[in-house]
Length: 364
Image (cartoon, rainbow, N blue to C red; front, side, top):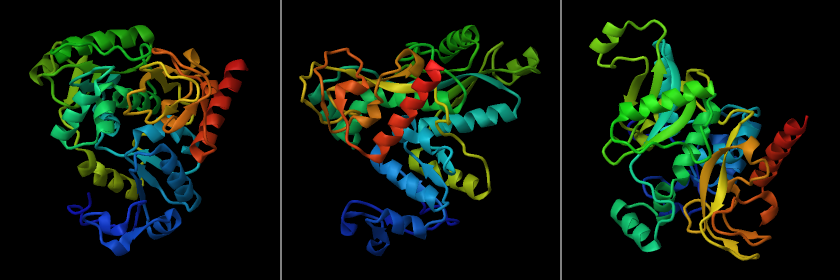
């Protein structure tokens, strides 16, 4: 990540792996101690992909007064809001949420008023077959878990929940609208009309195998002259689509690091009062006492973005890796807090606090 960023150096790497097993990092820079890593760094980058681990890292970093840059949508949507007041916390550019936040920032600086924060999804299958996922995992050089979470939509739903909370938007319905169309303008106009009906910007996606794997913002412009916008190839209006046809993952993280060093505000986080979460939906029947081996990227559950007010007792899917069921669940069922036996981790503690806060506010 930093090989082509001469203004930064790797001070320390915290890993649960053996130092000699990590390619490209000098063994003496590797530690298993979060405290040692945080003490050595001016800015902490958290990219473990593990909600429980991320919560521990962010807490230690904030206690030490260190800013944290993440590439961890699942962490933000599950418990990130609990850490928005304890220190500097931002998602990085590179994955879709950070890329959307950066595009939206550019749009607003040009005078646009965003109505839709959109993600472009190439393929979706809610109940993928294990053999197919293994095949695509080998072909793409990524893990089976990643392949499943991309395919069944869980990663997408997580991303758009983070965007909704962080950008002051909402979702049209549970699971999002997700028009399936190859003409981006058709989808953009449809979603913009829904946003106007809702009276709020929407976070959503378009499903197409022919559009680029990027992100887009649909916006109005209060000062736009139709003839000028047509000349600029933005169409007739009144809705204008700004497309960013790529997101470059870890290669873009240094841009966010530079923002932090320059004293800029966080690019994106889940906000202190999130209205959208990702609920867990059973892909199959599971008996009481059954083990959820892998919540995100497994074959037992998938996630859908939803408004918390519509599902106040739903447990976030990000907490459910490796937990046992307290009660049987049926295919298609949304899991609730009382359905599972959760360990007493920091992430679970903070998520419970957020849940109790929502319940208190709802009953006030």
